[in-house]
Length: 605
Picture 1 (cartoon, rainbow, N blue to C red):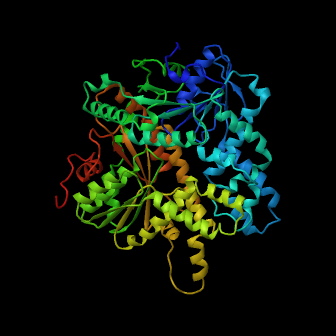
Picture 2 (cartoon, rainbow, N blue to C red):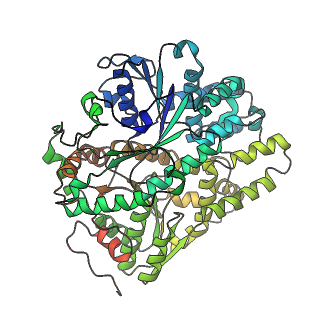
Picture 3 (cartoon, rainbow, N blue to C red):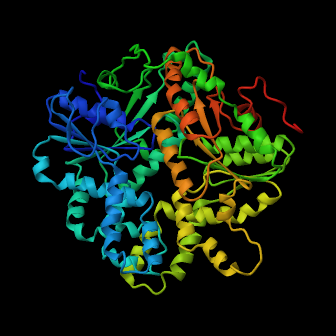
């Protein structure tokens, strides 16, 4: 494997944590790091707590929730913590003792509090903190490499004083992340030791993984600030998948991508500029199998692995799937309604939402596009360019602060100092922002009865469940209106009605984003919301590229597009990577019509 001159691998401490959004390549980098250390003679344990973990797939073997030697790499063992199984065991430990003791409605409320992402994250943290404090286990390894680090929010919660278990009493909390903490009190000493290990730069190094894209770099800057604020200072930055300049020489699409990446790197957020930084070039091959992982840290662009699937069939998956314009045509037949775009950060749902809004307005239909995305310049461009399109931007910070004040004034005014401190911390969770933004969205929903409302940056399925199950607006209205004979519609009912709302899930044609999108779909279905369509965005297979590297990556998209088409989506559009950034109404319309020849002229342009 050689000795790569990478800063994050120099003098590595006992614990290495790799963190980053889905699809940035942190699992591949964590696996390659573990191999590198093992081949250098170290005893290494690789641990994954990623809900979309594919460590076993990367090594081509079953791993699971027990320490398993990797036969092909002496001195390397691996362990995959199943976050869902950990969360279920965690729920059982909390709910079991009160089942049959408390009223069924209270037990159901506790179970719902424990249903979401916060519980899964805390349960996984519960599992791997045992690794950080198990001295018998630690004696057997020189390094433990973690794929996915805990968030700053989780660590802050674990640092709080006071007894969390009392916070589940009825009426004390507004419900998002404190419920899941109820089972932690007995393990406070162990958590204290684990947090101390995380904050010790002699024992721990955090590696932030991003792609050379402005959105990805902004996201990792937020993670850096959050972790640094709680004392986790020893951070490195790895920018993964940088397109080599040589690929830009003979292909216009590659040249455009290279230029965009160079600009994103030049505009690197100030908070990241002083971090030790490494860049890894984009590879043409899939990072599956020992041979591929051993080449990840090298400069082996010419590794000519033959894809293990039919290349012609792979590209035809993208070519034969519908274009985004076909979905827009079907949406337009309703003349009005709510179009809700959902998906993880970095998949391009803001752009897809804007493109759909422009295309509907171009067809002569009144449209309101609303977004909570910080990139307000997109909204400003649209508002100036197209008749019939109204653009608004919800300020998440403003809405969240308003929501926090309301909860503290109502739920928090009778709490003692410790209880209020817990509530204030809970209100700093990601769930709080989702709820606040959803409430702002709800004020706009009623417009969908007479025009199209296209919403970007939607709340997760768990937030929708939480709002419904904790007796929020929907339950209260239902209770008041029951038996009155008067018809009513709540925002939740509108979201659940396919005649009024079309939910589109946006993803990328890559393994982890597709897994995350499938999990989002399951959450929505639990909330009684059936996604109407999927959009596979930024597909190289649907683009026209002559770059050898990009062409081989296009072939690798085939299996993921096939999974979406045949396993997950009732209908699906595949949107190609474009040479020009889709900003402004004309380019957004080009994105919609990108596989239908020349785009039509804008109405009224």
